[in-house]
Image (cartoon, rainbow, N blue to C red; front, side, top):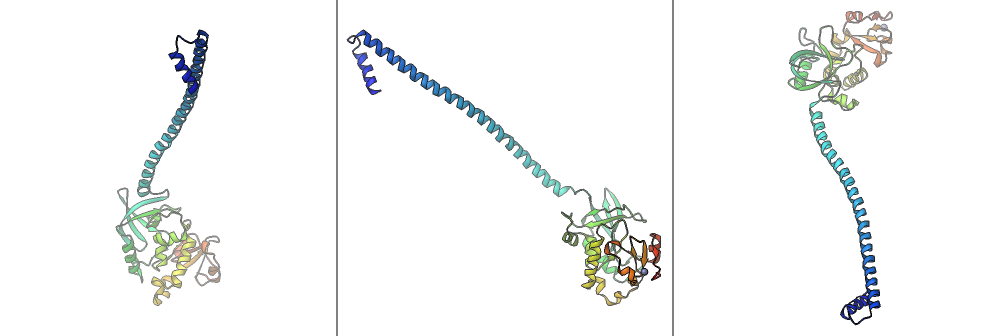
Length: 293
Ligand SMILES: [Zn+2]
């Protein structure tokens, strides 16, 4: 190349002295080289161009890809925010958020719902009376419910029945919405269960509202064993409240005295408690022929 450039310079300097054919040859050669190098460059350029184009397109695609996710990332971030808000505000299906405006007794409350007041009877539990009749431990149960529920937001869960014969809503009362309905959540977040575990209520099973009956029976046994609440009171152990209870079998539709051998054989899931003989009869149960309740 250097030689050639020298030759070229030489050629220019010795313009008139060199032979014509030599000049022609050199010019052609130079032209050829120039053309070749131009072609090479333009080829390279065009190659670069195409690769640039692809790159551009790639970039375009990439950026459109990047933009798309960044767009959706933004919108998903928004969605995330919205979701968070929804988690805070919205209540999962099957639950109704309500405010406890009054506590009537241990197992009955008044809630404010959609601008109306409704009486709610807690499903599956029975606290001693504290209103018309005064049963032992009734006041304690009522005060306990007041201390835990009055003026607070709760979440109501329905089982099968909407209302009882007195027109009260039949509901499970949750202090927080459960995430998975595990036993520990039921123990800690459902007030019906909390009453049983604390010995403030005994089980009162009325089919068809039996979703948590097995747990309730278990929790009551635990409270009895640990002598919680009224189970710790020796006088109450023999109180009329327990003596007059009857046990029904949901499958056979028969009811028994609590000490009947057949009553003891009823599985927890088929077990129903009745406060009185009349309650059992009016629920369509027939008296056992062995214990003759
Ligand atoms: Zn019996």
